[in-house]
Picture: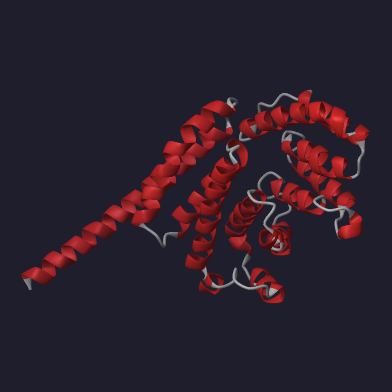
Length: 283
């Protein structure tokens, strides 16, 4: 009896520690996210985030089926890989981990997702996405953003490119629930997907421009990233130098400081300068 009581006490203690760790991770994630989003020095963020990523890995190792921790890991790894890592192999490795965390989180929330990423049955996958409740939009959005980051990390892999229709279906479900989700950024992702291919190959560049303009409007003109993406993906696809230079000029003429958008806007302005310079040879 004493032995059983001792084992029970250990189990209860471990559960309590896990709960405390999860709450601590949630608080840390919220605080860090707020600080990062309002940072106007991307280099500081790039230098500081790796330590937090390692800490997150430790939390996830202690709670491998904790969906909230896994989603946090997916968001942070995907954002870091997409925005701050230039080395191709390293970027791919980090994006892989972000997407893996997102898949595990979806599986932990809904067991039907455990095998949903295997095989090419789009209709079955689309039906599963359509069946998700409106409250699942945050989970779906995290899945889609980490998934698109996984594709972008290795665009030479046609197996990854083949996943684009499924990624688009996830984003479309989020837009159907909340077209202004993430300050309209969900519209920006759909816009980029529409501008990845010319119309002759199944792309929808004009619709992509509409999505990106909608993303900008939803933020009341404070989110500059959709404008930069419009120039990089849609204007260049259409070979429209006037549109390209005009929207980039608008980005550079706007103060990047805005609550929750400062870091993204700073990165958007940096990219805008690079695009204007490379555009001299592109057009």
